[in-house]
Length: 366
Ligand code: ASP
Image 1: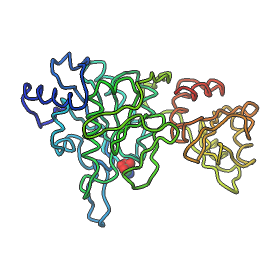
Image 2 (image 1 turned 90 degrees about the vertical axis):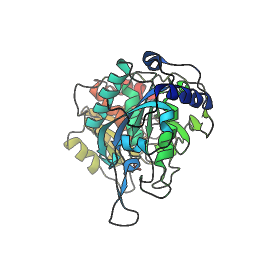
Image 3 (image 1 turned 180 degrees about the vertical axis):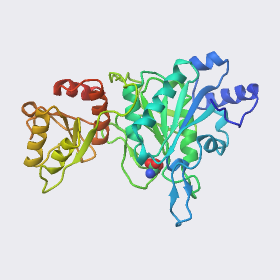
Image 4 (image 1 turned 30 degrees about the horizontal axis):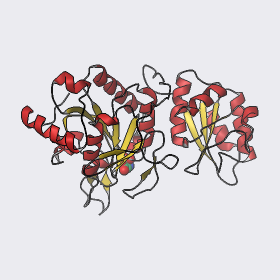
């Protein structure tokens, strides 16, 4: 583990840590803290890239390259962050999250599990691009069985921008990851002073710093200047933890986007290229044209697992309303958007869960 270079002495850290703890309402020390005999929480920062690590590019005024600055250097640039926690930083990848992939996900899980098993950490912060952050957060929530806060953070403006939002977001994420009251809340996403749960959070705006919202549930809390405010007590996340295969890739699951004047071609193509599952980003309540629904029914008959989701952006997809799910052998995604439904379906298929009613049950877990 690479220790962050900015360090004060242990006693100074302890006093500052207690002050920081009082400021954000922390009281009880937790496992890895006790193990290391320090008053500060131990937080591991795992860098994956994204705009938060972006740097201006000579091409044009607003152009930048994602994933150029290491997580350690991002932390080094934030005054006072070393007073919040004992921070160590490692780089897992340096990519824009549009290139996020199974290998990085497996590497994250391996490192986080090792850190938790060895009692190295009280919290984990993952710096990540915002484009697929909700997918990584939801993936981790489905495979990690821990109370330790896992917090994903990113930014909408690169580190070199005027008004860069990364430093404040990372500082807030550190406060959340190091706080005992963040334990047992599943995987969290922190941006723009707001804390979201992995199941509900979505990127909703292409460029605004207020892009992450949880349309079907609302945020789980806020990070204020002086306090960390969760809106509800922690509720156990009941999602059955799914096993990961020894190595990537996960089974192929394609998302098919529904639209007017749609025929069967996209569904048939997905089956031909070997999709083991298909998620329909359906119109409205997860619907599609007769041609596409017939093709999905034929795919389901051949053993492809079909889940109906919606392109709408909020609301539940309900069973057997306009589409006869029971008869056609489909599951519905309920509140999961297509990209999260894809993640869950990959994991279910990898775990041998392909029967439509068992798949449906898994989607219903909060
Ligand atoms: N394309 C970037 C990414 O997801 C955007 C961002 O981080 O905001 O990595």
